[in-house]
Length: 374
Image (cartoon, rainbow, N blue to C red):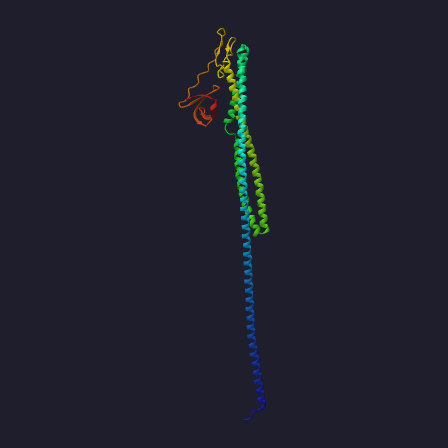
């Protein structure tokens, strides 16, 4: 069989072209596979690098957080040590202050005792001189005329009534119910002290928060804390001023009551002196009586007077009979002749706090009581 050369050549060419095409296709496929593998490797490498970078950042953040936490702990420790040191210094200063105060108190107590002894000796000397002058003055009353003695009686009765009135007025002021203004000042003082305590606690708490925010917080938080502390301190200053005003007002009231008490003591001295002078002239201060007439004899220091029979005096008007006290009541007869009927009595040491039949509460000094009837 005869094969045509042209056909052979064509077949060879076709086979060659097919082989070449197949070779190129296989090479292209291999290159694509290689590219895919390379891209995969590059992608895996990038992911690995990204994971390593994220892990590095996480570690850095953890390290930074740990550093800040340690700094905060260190700052808190420093603040705690500072507070402990300040507390110790305050305790030491308080101990030193107390020691000085106790030493000064001992010295002051000794000085006060010495001054008290000196004042008591001076008071005894003045009282002795006064009594001596009174005795000398009363010794000369026997030689006085009836008119002069009548003038003396009138003078001493006036002094007695004035002292009695002064005592009654001052005791009424002391025994009166509390003034609403005083109660208002007391409430104001209590409220101011409570407010001061609360504001001090708030300032202390805000200061601690301010210190903590200064370590980890921003500038805005720090400024807010400062503004809050400034507002609290302004309120604290106002509360302290209110406290000082209330203390000053109550101190004034206390001074007035002390002045009233001192006035009562002085008036009692005047009253007792007038009673003694009238007694020396033979007149009972608690009962109105006519002045001693001419020819009467008065002995200084005596409680009786003898009147000449030639002189007649008008009998003193008798007091109306007093109402009988209620059962179980106690009657206090004072040195000035005043009688107080008490349905209830409380012993307060140097005085009695009694409730009268009219429901009034009054204070009676034991030194003013002449007799007690039950």
